[in-house]
Amino acid sequence: MLYFDVTPVYPPYESSATCTYTVYPCADIQRYEAYLAEIEKHGFSLYAQNRIEENRFATYTNEGCLVQAAFIPADKTLRVALDIKTALYPKHPQECAKTVQPALWQFETDHRLIDCGMCYVMQCADGSFFVIDSAHSYSVRDNDRLHDFLIEHTPKGQKCVIAGWYFSHGHADHICKFTDFLKYNKRDVVIERLYYNFISQSHPDAELWDAADRRFTDAFLAEVDKHPEIPVVNLHIGQRFFVREFAFTVLCTHEEVYPGSFATYNNSSTVLLCEAAGSRIFFPGDASDESDRVLLSFYKDVFQCDILQVSHHGHMGLSTEFYKKAKAPVVLFPTTQIKYDEEFDHYEANRVAVAQAQECYISANGTVRFPLPYKKGSAEVYADETFESFTGVQNLWNYTYTPERKRELYEAYLARGGKPIEEYKKGF
Image 1 (tube, rainbow, N blue to C red):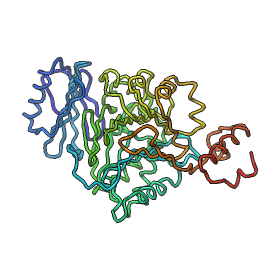
Image 2 (image 1 turned 60 degrees about the horizontal axis):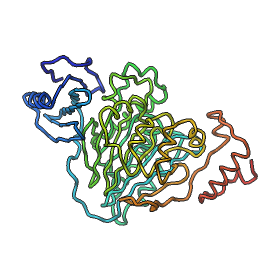
Image 3 (image 1 turned 60 degrees about the vertical axis):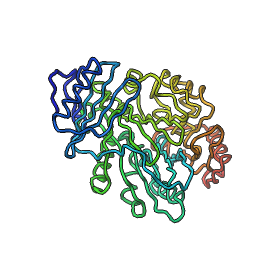
Image 4 (image 1 turned 90 degrees about the vertical axis):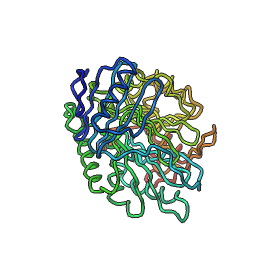
């Protein structure tokens, strides 16, 4: 690691098997610049710089190693990630042919057996895609559904290209169907890069995490290792990368939460801001209380956006204060109608996000397309494709609903264009 002539605020953090993260005291911009000069003395060359409000960021490289330096005036710290194994992120927009209108889809994951799961698809002007997360293992065929969706929306005569696939964190409902996609659906698809920063499985709090989730993360990483032809970008705070004409900025990772608690695994989520075709789109993944503390401490006005994915599917996630600052006119809930209804009265943050918005979309109610730049009322809602298996949900999760509630939900599903389901034709 890089040592400076100053004692770190906290012991160095082994944020992954290949990255060490150290927090140093840093009173002002002059000290920050002196640290950068020290990095250069160690043989590193400047790759890119970025600034978010008063925060300064710089990326340095040297023979396959990367140093990401961040000066955060709010807590007077210099944060240095020394990453010995990562691909470089594209730092400039890529010139490309303009064959389609850019768009964002909130993809309806299969929710017959599970109420969580999150997948978003963005299409660049050249017809290539940027995919965000995937779906749960209980969304059994979603790797096939997603593959078919991408093929269908690839311009005729073009190869299906996923220019980037990003993962907010390693929970099962965000990564499982990507693992299956690599195994079974990659034959006619090009994947150019993967983007993520997963917390180490050897973290001291790991014993508090669900054992199944840990196995799914291990399976994900093992499958990625089988594809060395796909570069993996390990994301760090302040990096601004481009996928074709879309710009993405990393606002927080689990490294900034350190030394806070990861008893709640969702606090390991990376938080990403996208600027696409004139629209600002916020993807906090499942970011929760510790991530919220970091975001509100480090930034003031960066949260305001046009489209906002509500954190943690609308469960316990980001705070009321965060959503007040975001002021998003469009809010997206990657969840089911059942779970949305159950939790809406319990979480003030959700109610604030919805009250400020002009449009609200629940992913289980049908895939939604947002042409970019987004204008109010221009969303296209597709027919609802999947519906709850009440017997399966009861057997798996012990959730039960009254016949009246089941009938209400089923009739709403049919009204959204869903196909009749044989087992429900006789009623509930």
